[in-house]
Length: 446
Image 1 (cartoon, helix red, strand yellow):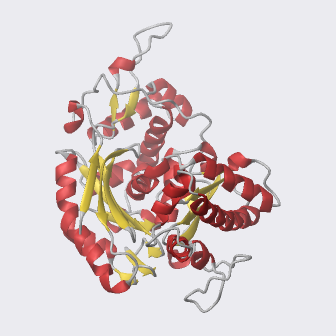
Image 2 (cartoon, rainbow, N blue to C red; image 1 turned 30 degrees about the vertical axis):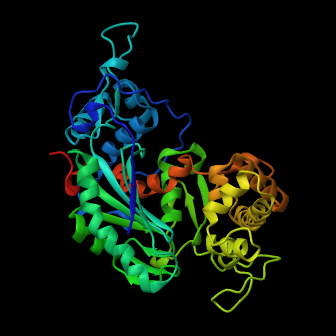
């Protein structure tokens, strides 16, 4: 299985964990008007070994860490004001978080007050610990490392098997073989707190199992156990639509913390709902299955026995098959079709816009039923090209009965890196909910 990798250049200081603050780190713009979120851990995304502990201390540490995430670099007095904690409590929590390598001081960003010494701001230690990520896909899978702000440090692609269950075991085997080396090579000595593994279909985080992934032919695959056995690190798994919604809540637009719906359209079509900072899982973590949502004016046969199901009509495989049938491509490849369309091929453009119309109808239905503050759509054409995003927004507004604001329909803040950030968010979400407990149990800096 071929692999390709890309590594973003890092400052030399980024290759080792240090309690000192690198003076050349870029300032991070504060995110305004962040709604409050719940800091307590969810049973679904906390490792079994992590349950228990000092709830108040963990909540205080989470309040400090989330304030630094949202507003850093930020003075401790400002952290106290924003979090509602006393200055003494902030100082105690800072020391704990700094010992774990999660935050550090930024002397180069110090600002002078009207009276007294300049205040040295605190920031997330983006040159400290890392989080590994895996996205298992049909055309290819991705390995990545992200920092504590969810930004990709390095990534590598592994060619996938395509659709079909008989070869899907090769996907997992290649990941098991490559993951330890990738983490060791790309982390370059920096601690890795854990690995987030995401994929489409029905994924049960509590059991660490892919219950069903139809294009890969997977049924009850113990993904967490397989990857933990390979890399020796804690692994948290989730559905990729839910993980992208979680990453938007953590690192993206403020309105996502109030309510967000995410529609993912690729080899698998699924969705996610987040309310008040919590992504809904449902019984047995089965929430988000919209693959068989009926689509008007679509008659594609579905393996379920019906015609016009959303996945059968709008998936990458369906789009690629239509392109081959119409002579636009010699083999099905949704990514290649989108680039042909963006380059001006009229036949390819018609096919891409036809799928956008199907996706928009599904997004408008979810918007009308749930009326979220934000609707995210992950689909290759709208991720890569602004004019297709504009076409999607226009179609959503045409079909929605409640939305008249095109800005409510968007793509992930991470753009084409959405799946990489989302894989990291599978680990970073519980870390930010209870950083002391998570980091100490997951093997952070000691």
